[in-house]
Length: 123
Image (cartoon, rainbow, N blue to C red; front, side, top):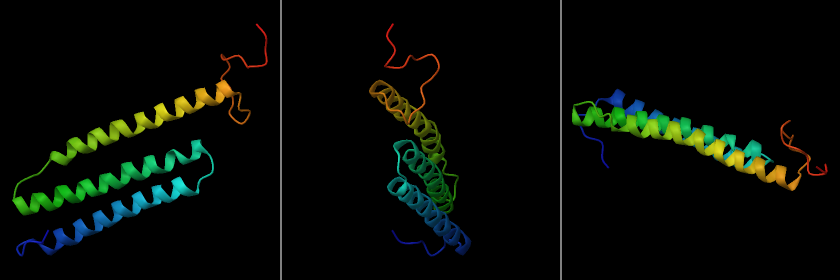
C-alpha cells in the first residue's frame, strides 16, 4: 500500500507511531509468554499484550482510513469491543480449566478453595 500524496504528515507519523507501539506491546506479550515459568503467570502476558497492542493498531487504522477517505471510519470500534470482551473471557476459561485440572490431580502448588475437599480425605 502506498501513502497518498495528499495525506498530512502528522497523520502518517501518528499512524506509524501507533502501529509500532502496538507491535511493541504485542512483542512484549510474546516475550512474557516465553519467559514466564508457570502457566498461571504465562497466561496474563499475552492477554494484556494482545489487548493493548491491537488497541493501538486499531487506533492507527481508524486514523489512517479516516484521513484517506475524508470521513470517519469507525468499523474498528466494533473489532475493539469484541477483542476487549473475548480476551478476558478466554483468559478466565483457560485458567478455570487449568485450576480444575490441578485440583483434580492434587497439585500442592495450587491452593484449594475452602468448599472443595482435598483428595486424601475419606468421606
